[in-house]
Length: 354
Image 1: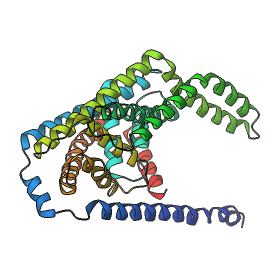
Image 2: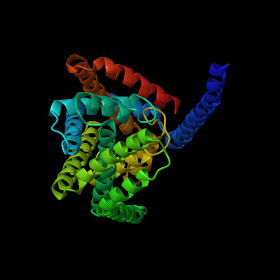
Image 3: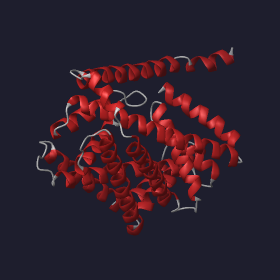
Image 4: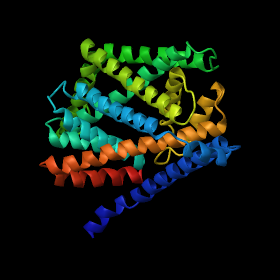
């Protein structure tokens, strides 16, 4: 009887979680459907087929190579943050980052962030909270630098989109919030220590909360080093320039002309679209972003769709190749691959349910 009584309160949790998961999937599917309809209406599919058929493979290969270099540089940027607490071999970070991007491409709820966190923490002495926080900080810096670069690039365009002023406002706001947070980090650290100490919880719970908060603070404190922050921002600029160059080369492969500044705007649109609830692969969001950004710059809707379809295929080819190599390298080299497999399955299952 006691077993039944203790187990019964857990029963309502599953429906609640399943209902939330179902609502998220319905919202993502509905959004994908609406955006796909808006993006694809009026597209001449025979012309899309003709454009793709006449793709110049030598330039497509060059674009894929440029994209691969971009992913490698991204991994080295993450390593700058991770090594603030412990020296980590570059290949370890590269393969973990590659597998993370692979999981993000095929799985919902950005499960790749948990996957790459687990891979790094299982190969080092770094806590999972610390690793995950550095990954999230990297994402924030990435977006801020991209928006700032896109805004600067847009100033050079003969035609300036109406939303350019809004973009500038976002840049100033994000920079102000980020700067204020870094300056107040010591005070936040002291406040959280006092809050946890007086928290009405058991000693074990308070100790766990203290460890989590300490690791988060350590990860964010890595950005308070002006030299390291400057390095991260500089490497992020290189990443986005590589991505923009890849986009320009890919457009050339399809017989289109894409300005570097417009490529940065497209990257911004795609990055902001990732914040929306989406299906794996961000179906609908990617197509809508391409049409919205490219058509004001003399791209026909059909050309924009042909371009983004090839860009998606090239991106999936590169990250799938790097990710599978990363998985193979990890399974061959990791002394804790069995533990990782269990954690990997658990994280993916939890992400799918959420």
